[in-house]
Image 1 (cartoon, rainbow, N blue to C red):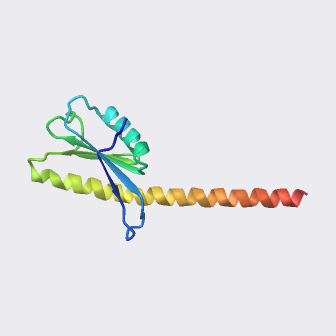
Image 2 (cartoon, one colour):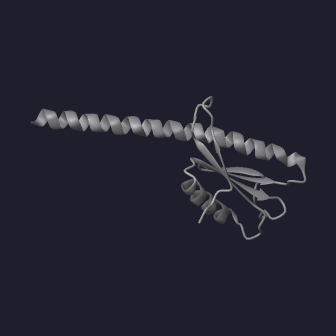
Length: 130
């Protein structure tokens, strides 16, 4: 199943160049917050994205949903295509997504350095024992 309506790949001028943000937009009353977050997890895996942004239509968004909120590496936003006053939420969601991409990239770099250091340590330890 193909999930993820659109993907933005950050350009070379960004601190997280190459990072991908997937967007999922729905105007369907069946979508709850848990279902939206599950859909984003699937979309992120399908589209090899580090961050997900789910856009609820204001017409069908669950009543308890905040206009914009972050859940880990996902952002949930409520937007009304007929009301330009909600465009700021959409723009803010993209900026949060970009910031999360930098955080994710830094986390991946730290993990990579840790793994490389661990391998080097184990190699030296093994050589030292023989």
